[in-house]
Amino acid sequence: MTTLAVRAPGGGSRQLAGTGTLLRFALRRDRVMIPAWVAVNAMMILSMPNTLKGLYGTAAERADLVRQITTNTSFRALTGPVFDTSIGALTAWRAGAYAGLLAAATSLLVVVRHTRDEEESGRQELIASGMVGRRAPLTASLLAAAVANGVLALLVAGGLASQGASGALAFGLGLAGVGMVFATFAAIVAQLTESARLARGLTSAALGAAFVLRAAGDSATDDGSSVLTWLSPLGWLENLRSFADERWWVLLVFVLAAAVQAAVAYELAGRRDIGMSFLPTRPGPAQGRMGTAAALAWRLQRGSLLGWSIAFFLAGVVYGGLTDGVADLIGDNQGARDIFERMGGQSGLTDAFLASMIGMLGLVASLYIVASVLRLNSEETSGRAEPVLANAVGRLRWATGHLLVAFGGSALIMLIAGLGFIAGYGKEAGPILGACLVQLPAVWVIGGLAVLLYGVLPRAAMAAWGVAGAVLLIGWVGPALDAPQAVLNLSPFGHLPKLPGADMEWAPVLILLALAVALLAAGLAGLRRRDMTA
Image (cartoon, rainbow, N blue to C red; front, side):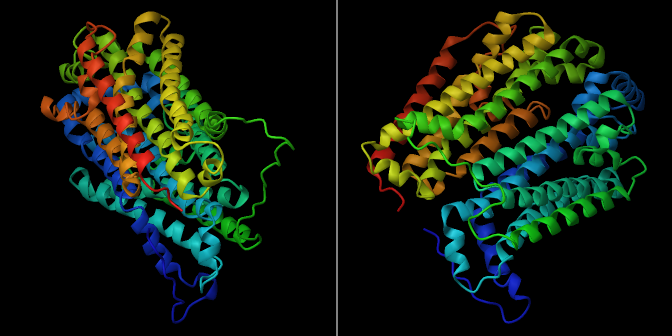
């Protein structure tokens, strides 16, 4: 167990005493999570220029792409408008919205983990008993988020400098700005809520609302001028117009928003006691209504599952609605057609597009199952599992409740994604649902590996995020870079049949299912034998 010794610094404000030590401790705790998320984001962005050069190598091809995007409201809603035909501008257009989402998600997780999570577990009260300033923990969490966003900005600015130093710097700073706006927003939410789970739910909902506002605004206008676009920090990123006569003043919007939200968070932090909140949790009924460990796990994770279900349904509707227009967008561009065929098979452009988009959602579902499995780890380390296990509840029974939600929930969100595709596309209901469900063996392998790490090596359980990030990177970037099949096969998703369109292959599906069961069984066996965290 990592120990923390806090010493008062020789000078400075007593309100911030111990900030440096807490920052180093936070970075040490996140030494796997932050590098993994930043690396996935940076590599996704930096792989884009070479991909675009291969797809749209001539000025005429790029101009035709810009014309298609400008006139297609669905694609503008998905990725935003494009402001120039240069490779740099197309990179900012293609990666901007999703890179901003990843930067924001990283910042939200870091801030909530080192503020509300610490208070809920009781560790913050222990630390505060030493010579630690009242606002030091909040400052350290924001600085940890700033480090993550700063590294991302440096990697992006340096990696894209060949496309134009000014545009690369603007894009990197814009991504960091999005991250810090959501970091300071998470700091406010951490003061308002008493539960880390609720804090993560509210911040994730705000991030989803920001994407929806940007999408709605961009579908209405082709230049990012909609009021709805300007209501979203993701809209500010696109209106920075990196690589296209940059609007440097937009960076002041990021700075002002982050500064105001940070000031509000600091004011709220100074007006409450540790462990308390401005929106206390409602007291439960006098008599409990949950009689099983599975019911408790469902109660704890149902909000998260609902949020993921809504997001997957909306994603399915959007991607399904784009299917009929993909042939017009790609036209006779053989490079783009090849990428879709590498991702989704060679059974026809429409089926290849559907298979590739469904496969992308399968990759994202691996994040859900890792988060849900690792809820076991947070319940154990926070001490909440101890009173449950002190009753007539065995370890395996307790863990099984959470794993049912994790593995069953992943099946549910993929099924709901299929319904979204059907609603958006309006055709091929059976094949689409089959394509969504065939992703589950690969998702469950990732979940099984998370169970194995938690059960056998609990201190390394967070490494499951690194595995999920690597799988995402292989699935998203590998086909675009025409990576060797041996590299693609490192991911369990590389062995799945490319449905709809391709023939169903049961052998790899059954092998992946058997591997998932073996990993799950090994993880539960390790949990049964090892000591629980006290």
